[in-house]
Length: 178
Length: 208
Image (cartoon, rainbow over all chains, first blue to last red):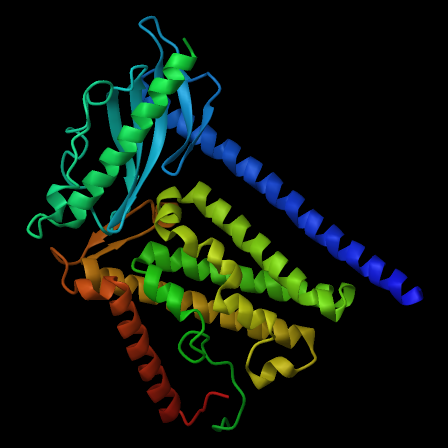
């Protein structure tokens, strides 16, 4: 009986330690999420040229975790910071979409410049104005040709895929907001 | 006078082959080497500091799961911090940051190290050894990242947090792109291990 009591106390102590660790983690995650959200707000405000005050909507996408609505006279716009990752590089960009899902502006914030993929050239010009009824340019098919395969073509196709998903998400959000 | 039989703390990567896989796979740049090396070093120091308290509180049967729980919490806290401070590096390292929880360096600390010195009872001497191992891990990870970036991409990009993102272009193009790939990482680490052992042999020292 005494051994069972000791065992129970030990188990409770272990559970308390794990509970404390969980609390610590949840607090840290909330703090970092809040700080990340504030930083993204600043990046989008900088791109849009106006302040972003509305509460962000959480979205479930590996490239982006929140979208900031920017109410305007000509309908809502939406801003998001997207994370692009391919086998040959990583990058982060601030993007501004119309309520129809059309990409209005996009700017590379920072990239894994050791690999240069997202840093080189006028990367995003092919994507501007796309979305809504216009499909994003895809290079996945042409990348199957051995002559066309490169880190850059893979990154381009990856970015097109992310923007296409974002466009669809924002169209849905735009419809929900009326 | 030091002899080959004197116990000493070998470098965990070069002498103990600890944490070789994540370094070969993900430490292809100075920034990645720094983040991975710093993470493994900080997590191992924190684990080593918490272990005596855990030994006093928890019975043997609960020590392993609790140690792993603490290790996971530390690795997640570090990943969160990196996601905030250097988001692009964090995204690039992907799963290797949370995997610091089961990194060989953490496991090495959890099981009490492999050097005979670690069997000493003094908590202070244990902590000094852990600090030396952590520092050794960090420096070698940093060096491997820097060499792979310099040889693989011809650049050295200093992390924005530490040097305002300064970028040093050493050569145009990629002189030895193979070194930036995981295969090249293993080749570089293998050569470094061989060199380390030659140096130890010349100094008449043997890895315990």
